[in-house]
Image (tube, rainbow, N blue to C red; front, side):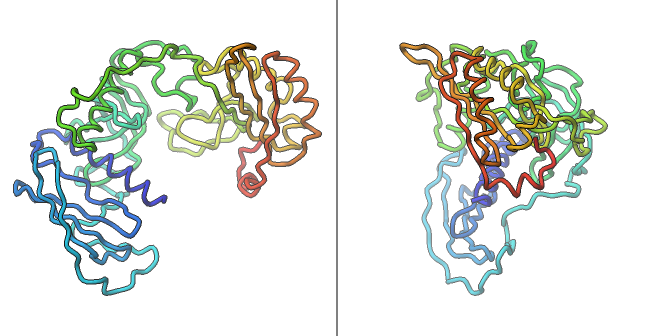
Length: 391
């Protein structure tokens, strides 16, 4: 399953990289070179202007099991497949071995690409769009190679550090803004940027709507093969409220990063600091951003967060003895009684008696709380022993 999802993610980015490559004619767009199937690997290759696509099904050892001749009926890749079986596999594949034949699956490169791009190098990028999944679609200024950059927004000129290099594209993360993006607005949250909960608070909501519609249109065209997307797409229904709309938020017990990352130290390991309650830091999972108010949840839920921080603070004897890991706040609007909340305290040790007093005081502090639940996750015990970011 992990291999399947990994290959699907690579396919999506190879499609986008091909689409956004400068100067490439539409008829010569290349399909992704590998698909993962339950019984092996499928290799796809296009033959220039011949209008044919060759697709070969391989097992894990690379042996060809079936070849398909696929005539393309349009320049956008609307195809029909006719298959013919080949001889049975002649050798037994070794576990974990994947032999590459012909146009087989391409492996992520850790060295330099043909453009001289290497993992860990710093590059200047211009962002031209937003890909499905939220990464910015950028290009190198000299070669025009596509780079997918996390947290980059259209119109932005930025400096980024390369994380992965593949044949047709690369992946990077932003370390410095050289010129702000288009449609800039001030983010209302003081934790924006450090917190990993939100990515586009500093982008105007109307611009967000435009980019989301564009992503749906591209998926219909590339994946669904829809030529005239306007004939089936309806206008996007905008949110009534762009803040305080979440009905569930999970806050983590963990440790803050004692060495905030800078453009010079962004690739360094996080230094664990004092115990805190909050949300995971942007771009990594070991540290937590200390948060006392979240704009995604309603006012009553934020009062619960305040009560938890006061009654069961991170590093307190109760939090430590029970090994508290999370606090979940779920909201619901009752037609008669109004707003109602459920609070779930998740720990690694089953010690409900030690949390009883805190649960009662949380319910008393916030009248909207109708239940406090204790969740135990003993299966995560070994993981917690190795995790230095414990409570």
